[in-house]
Structures are given as structure tokens and as C-alpha cells.
Image 1 (cartoon, rainbow, N blue to C red):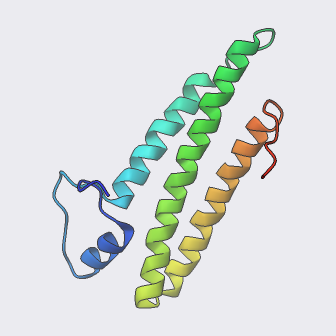
Image 2: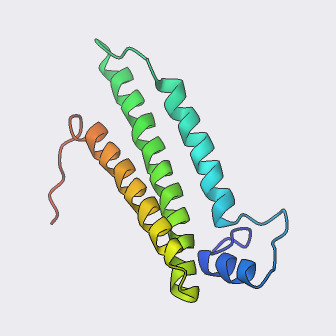
Length: 127
């Protein structure tokens, strides 16, 4: 793992012990925030682009939307992983519910990826 990135386990345990990380370290919440900001901006930039009659543009816009939802999916999974680790280590049942909510949001973004890509890409059989 890149030394600048902090794992979920290291983040939760260090924060629980009252520790902190330097500004050169990327913690799961920081990464999740960056992913949300950048991918919501990507969705905003392609919103309202008329792709009718231009297949190449339609594929490009669909790719931006799919990648943006994949990024948002990862952001929610990171937030869910932090809450789940807190629950597993310290038994905080509120964190269990927070984890469930974030993982449900991650699933919603995955569903968006499927909705965007299903009409334009052929299914690949698992072989």
C-alpha cells in the first residue's frame, strides 16, 4: 500500500487512541471526501449534455457517469468500512447502523453504474 494512504484499521485504531495523522497522509475520510467532490463535479459537468444523434458523445458521457458513480461507490464503501470497523472493535451499535446506511448508498451507486452501462454494453458471460 502506498505509504501516504492510511488503512481503515490504522485510521480507526489511531483515532480511538487519540492519535492523529500528518497533513501528508490520506485518511479514509479524506479520500472519501475527495472522491465525492470530484465525482459529483464530473456528474455536474456532463449533466444536460445532449447526446442524441451522436453515438460517440453518448458513449463518452456514459463513461463519465459510470466512472463517477464508481468513485461515489468507493467513497460510500470507505465510510461504511470505517463505521463497521468501529462497531466491530468497540461495539458501538450506532456505528453498525451508520455502516449499513453507507453500504446501502454504495449499492445505490452500483445500481446506477448498471443502469448507465446495461443499455450500451453487451453482457460478458462469466467463463
